[in-house]
Length: 206
Image 1 (tube, rainbow, N blue to C red):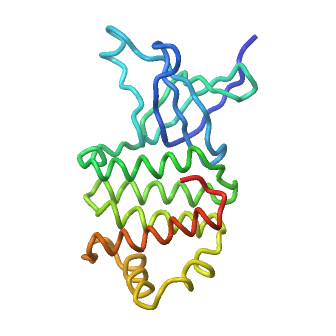
Image 2: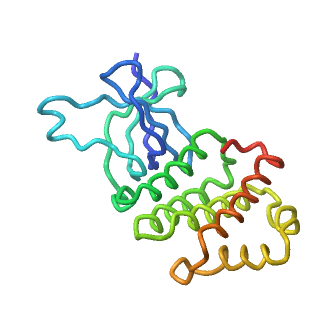
């Protein structure tokens, strides 16, 4: 009996080997379907030479098939749309991108905000790949994600900040990355307050 087919454009959020060394497990994110758990056959021998594997943060068109009503999808074919090799040149940039990708993989995203999440992925990965400061990129990304998901971050978190912290947060969130020169300790201080509010007031798992 043929499997259920699906064609979609998606970002690769996570990759890991499955229980079998013949397959790897991937979580991908698409506008139409949110997070999809996928399996992809690991190429070996000559096939490995001629087949470029999907990598973290790739955006690709995927041809999928499921034999279990969509609980898992097998990647039959893919076509690259965009890669972000610059992210891997910095450990901190890679860690920031991986943190955001893992957040998306483990938390359901409302259907109406998936388009905003795709835009945010483009913005986050592009900034990191071009050398933007990972600590500030993470603060901006997390704030925008919370706002776009409908959490009252501006109405509840913002008023809790002290006057000086509010001024610093406004600079960090509103100024372009190229114009930023805040001390890392200050960025970490503001980010920690946002993450603490997230843990206390939302159901999002960091």
